[in-house]
Image (tube, rainbow, N blue to C red; front, top):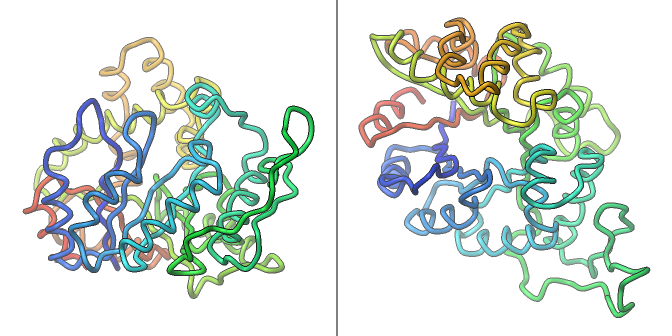
Length: 343
């Protein structure tokens, strides 16, 4: 099992110790470092900043929001970081949700699967640099023509020759259709809330993608980099209480009351009633109560909390289910070094 350091996105202020966590993770043998974005800090700036102090770890985004950048802008950022890092970049993409896409980026949220497919195709044209980049659309037509255009747009090739003609792309996917799409067109899957209990279900969705004509990968060379909350402790109850507000936020506070892709993940796990109760409390401003009613079993389903023997047993279970990398979020150098003993 490989380990990745998941730094996530910033809260109200930048994190104080991420530079030392990155240094410690590389020294401890971690495979990768990932950053994220929501509607505050972006993913690329801190990844480049902290990644500049590394030599070996892969540098990934988990995840970039498609609507934050045009596909060519994303491809430019990716080829730039790939050059600067000596070919260590991983592009992790996600569609986000309509509340963020329409409310923050001012973009339409139509046909997320089709947009993802078109977006990645354009990026790969940029990196391949075999011909000027074109796209028939309908989501990202290149060159843009028609009403309200000058008619002067022309297909272009990137001035900079990419270091690699094929930079790895992973998808942050949660629903069955999006997971199948990841298996068909991407190099890996970035699940946020993963439970090995549903491994057979995930594998059915992945196998649907692998079986499609022209599928890019097979199970043998496809990565599953799952975000994993791992806490090595003798006091499970205290750790559960620390994790529950995070779960309540994603169940009840992300998206809208009736459109929350994270909530749907937990519904598929069998916690529909919990999701409904948490959402009602969270939307009423009773966030502390929403966290308190999250049952321990919900935490146990997608987090690993316990003594070292229990944690090792559960890590082996995740690996047997098909996870290739666990993305962990230690809070200190000591925790980085402790987690490194698991791989």
